[in-house]
Image (cartoon, rainbow, N blue to C red; front, side, top):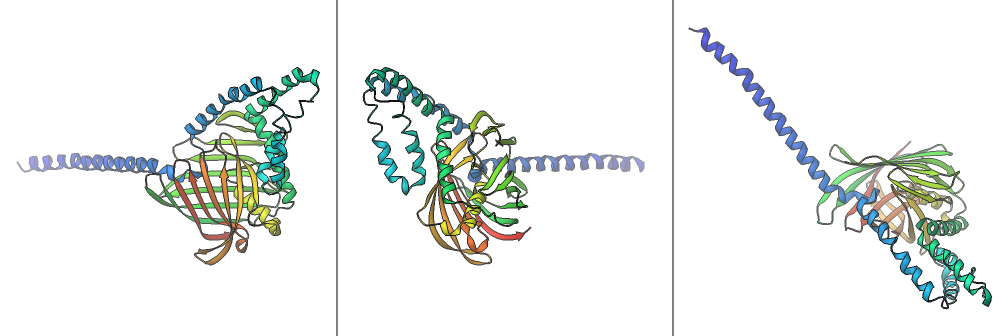
Length: 376
């Protein structure tokens, strides 16, 4: 009579324990799902590493229908083709101040060259003019012509590069999405080199999650950084690779079938900061307020032209004290999802980046503020 209640009581214990265990597991899974959903909602505010997949595709497809409209004027305005040469001298006059305008001066003379101005050859000159619109139509050809000019100008101005010493930089990160939601986290840049080759690992984290990271590796030369490979990985997305093929002078992408001509000097979305630091450290006397430069930066799918302006020096407060830093404003071209960057490089800190602000065209913003430097 006494054994029956005891056996019933002991039989209920496992079932209660299993119920509690299952309930705890369900609550844990729900909590993780909520955290993952929250992180996905916040990711837009730290999008300075990468292009938005949809916007990039749409912007490229919209550019391709435009060439027929640009080709239409040459057909009915064959006589007005001569008016094109006058703009070339006008732009060349302003060429001394704005480095980024020089790509235009080299593309315009291509139009007068085919038209030899001999009356019998007018019909044949109209035929060579057709390839000129095609060159402007083809993004790769236009990019290649602009790259040659921009790289030559930078080379003429900055003839020496001195990469900062190896170090690990730790940043405080604050992202604010377009609707006002904010996300705080931390970031690291691990910069390593032996004077000939370099690696750069950049990472942004929040809570226990790695939200975005990239890796750049390549060689160091007289003109600074020459990337060979750029790897990008962000939360919830597949890893992408961008290859800089220096022998064949091409840039290719694992996330795109595009192949972009390369003329040397192109950077990736991790190395561009350190290239600017390298040329500033190598030629500090040539860093001047009001100077305009142009740099070509490869992402996961494309290569964009970035216009860079050196604004001047500012005083910044860091955890270890106040420092003076050059402020640079960067405006990517219209095809990029980026709206603008502001970058601060401090000569007092070996030209390391001490602050970075970014805003994309959606209105999302992110700020990185240096909190610690550890020598490597």
